[in-house]
Image (cartoon, rainbow, N blue to C red):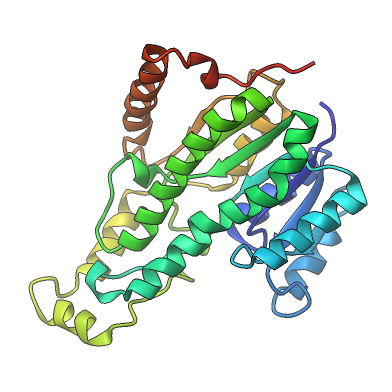
Amino acid sequence: MSQKIILVTGSSSGFGRMTAEALGRAGHTVYASMRDVAGRNAENAATLAAIAGSDLRPIELDVQSEQSVNAAVDQIIAESGRIDVIVHNAGHMMFGPAEAFTPEQFAQQYDVNVLGTQRVNRAVLPHMRTRREGLLVWVSSSSSAGGTPPYLSPYFAAKAAMDSLAVQYARELARWGIETSIIVPGAFTRGTNHFAHSGRPADEARLAEYEAGPYAGLGDQVQKAFAAIVPDDADPEPVADKIVEVVGAPFGQRPFRVHYDPTQDGADVGFAVLDRLRAEMLHRVGLSDLLKPAEIG
C-alpha cells in the first residue's frame, strides 16, 4: 500500500480522532485538523503528535473560516507537495424540538456540516484536478436513509444535505480521475462526543412549551430509547478501520458507499434503492461514465 498525504477534518475527538490515529498506524502522513490547536485543543494535538510510529501532524483548521481552510491547505501543500485524500468528518449535533431552534442555529449546523466541506473542497480540489487523482471520503449518517428519532432535526437535515452534496461531487469529479467513498455510520451513544457536546435550542420559551405540552419528557425518552437499541458492544472504532480499508484499496475498486451500523436502522436498504435509482437515471440519459472515476494516464 502506498503512503498517502491525508487531511482529516474534525480530528480532536470522535470519528475524526479515531480515523486520524488509524490512518497513522497504517503508515500514512495524516494532517489531523482541528480548531484552536494552540489553545483548548493543545493537549489533543500534543497527544496525537506524540503517537510513536505514526506521522500525525495536528494542524489548525476551522471549517467555518475560508481563510483558515486556505491557510491550512497552503501549509500542507508547502510541506508535503500534495494532498491525496480528504476525509470530510467535521460535524456538530443539536438536540431538541426543531421549532425551538432559531434560523441562525440551523444555519450554523449547515455551516459546519455542509458549507465546511465546500470550503475544504474549493481549497483542495484545484490541486487534485491538476494531478488528475485524489480521493474524497465523506462521513455521512445512516439518518439520511434509515430510521430516525425526533429532536435531531438540525443535524439530520444537515447530514442529508452533505450526503446529497457528496453524491453530486462524485459525478462532477469522476472525469478528473478523482474518487469518492461515502462512509455511513449508524448511531453510537458511546465512544463519540455527539450527544455530550450537542447544542440545545436557543428559544427557551418555545422549548418550555414543548416540555409543558404533549411532548413533555420526549427528549429523555428519545435518548433512552436510542441508547437501548444500540448493542452494548457497539464500538465506533470499526468506522475508522473502514476508512483505512477504503484509502488502501486500489484505484477503481473503492466502494462508493460503506455502511457500519450495529443498530441496523435500515439505511443500507434505503441507500441501496436511492443509489440504484440515481445510477439508472444516469444510464438513461447517457452519462453512465460519471458513475466510475476515469483512469487517467
